[in-house]
Image (tube, rainbow, N blue to C red; front, side, top):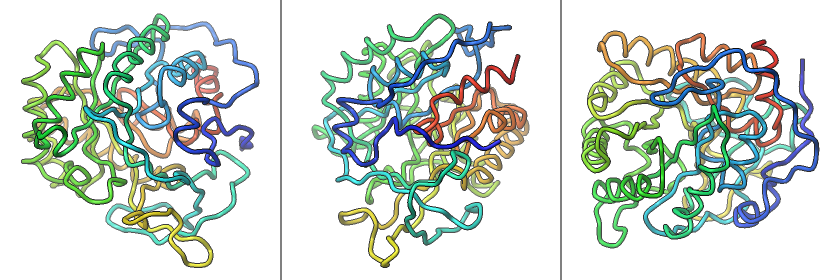
Length: 358
């Protein structure tokens, strides 16, 4: 069954700042959730379900509260930094329509299109540059966001380091920001090693390097201690390279999430760069056409976890557009699963999952 796009909860025609201040944009009814049949355990929390929304669409406590009320039990607060950082210029999201599923190792050349009719066809590029409010703003807002989720739900706080922030190198700032995130009330922390929208710099390729990523993970673990669950988000890699990265990070992390997006070059139908600004020809592709590579990541990660006899939670992200996609990702071995692109246009996705699981 196809689900027509009726909503723009993140309004791509507006700036990031307008969406932060006024979103999500929604004026329809909220569903009555089916009776909860049983709980699932995620570290110290008994949760209503294993589904959520990854770092990205949930810009602040208003967004966390809304989507928690819509039945997404594991919302992730959008990635924060130790220092304020502006968003890339708008537009930040445009629609693309790759002919086929994007494969690992390829960098597609894509053309922008008009908005598709159905959620299941939705593929976009997004390019924000990981904006962040000043720490004084987001630390106060995290407390509000934590208070807005209900029993059986838990919020994850995403963060990342900024090379050179207040004189700190990248490793030091990752650890410094982790400490701030914990102080702000982050119950579960997740750091991002795989953003393709940074216009260069070290952070975009961290997940590809076992030594660099594990050095940062070790510094974060030493800073926050062992009582706070800590996850890393990485991208898909060839099997042996992925295994090397996972093995290096496993001693320091409680969970691994993936994937973020896939890089692609995006132009408008006239052949011009679609997103304005230097370094933005390449941006992250997400939505329906990265489902296969995201599913492949989970299948490989499950196998690697078994081969290493490791103990970490697996979070499946990428290309989850339907309730059935949630089930498929969980059946592949993910402990929890999250949707980002679909929920920007389909706030009822969690409801359909809960109804399906009855």
